[in-house]
Length: 277
Image 1 (cartoon, one colour):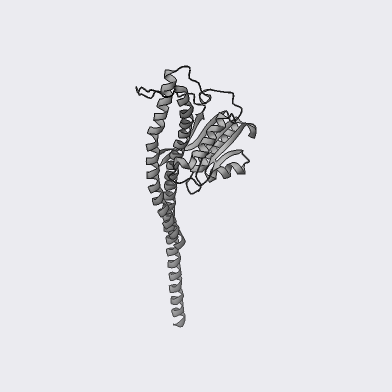
Image 2: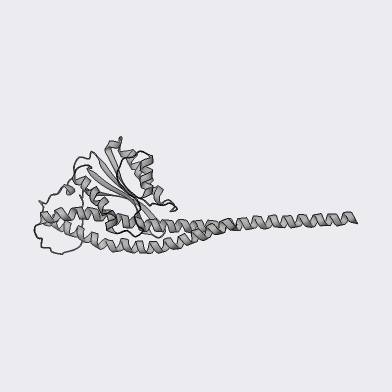
């Protein structure tokens, strides 16, 4: 009982910490959306004004090798947060590829790195120890290198696997294709903004498209971090509730055993008195 009570104190404290981190992470994820949306709006505006606009990131090509970014946590105790996204990645790889030459993984988080390494899945890039409230600088190098892999034709397609934050009690495994960017021209931003471009649209597109792809990666990371803290909070809440139930069961068993021992002692005393008489 003492051991379970101490464990309950730990899980209860972890639940409160995760709740605090979740609130901040949710705010970070929501505050990043306007930035990403504005880049998309500008790129879509260029594409709409100039039908001759072209860029490797906007064009389909034969897919010989696919890149998968998978975002997990560095620690466990988060329920099905890690296992769900890793299982989805593994099923996708098994379904679409016959050889490890056909894909590569960019692992974000210790769980993703160890999962892929254990199964001999090719890992092109990895990062471990991302902060609970990450800045873009934390993953800028990884994001830039990953986008550069597509530009250099090391990969022909790039998708990302992560947990989308729906609510404090719900996270959804999500897969998005980041590159090539084929649907941006069809996106309706609802904005009638007019832009003047300097020096010209093509050069601006050369800068904006990599930034847009990197922003999608960072936005997914922020979303995933909010999901991680929410999942850990839910898991620790369940662990605390289970500890309460276990303590009740142990106390009941203890009281029964204690009552049985007292009854046994009374019986022995009574028997001894009767023998003396």
